[in-house]
Image 1 (cartoon, rainbow, N blue to C red):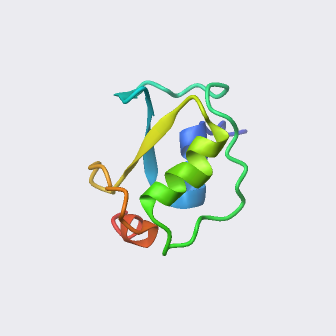
Image 2: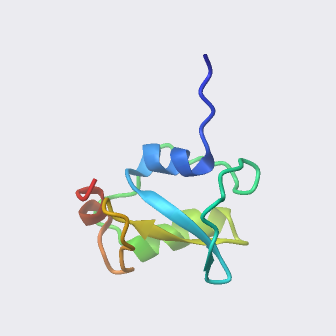
Image 3: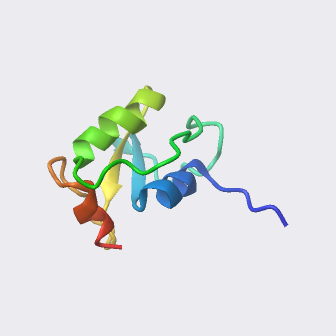
Length: 92
């Protein structure tokens, strides 16, 4: 059986955290369809020492220019931009 992953699942599997997609500052919580977001083609997670803001700009927004996102910690709260990715990953 082939498992179809959503783009959000791809990000979680590669990066180790969940994201909430936004457009014009509004959450798109029901965004589950592939095709809306571009494929997540990065093969390795970004370094733990990089920040949430760096990941959003370098990885998410650069490949999905019509959208932005919020990086979520394990408890579902939003990680602030200066937080290191290793700190976010440790919450899962």
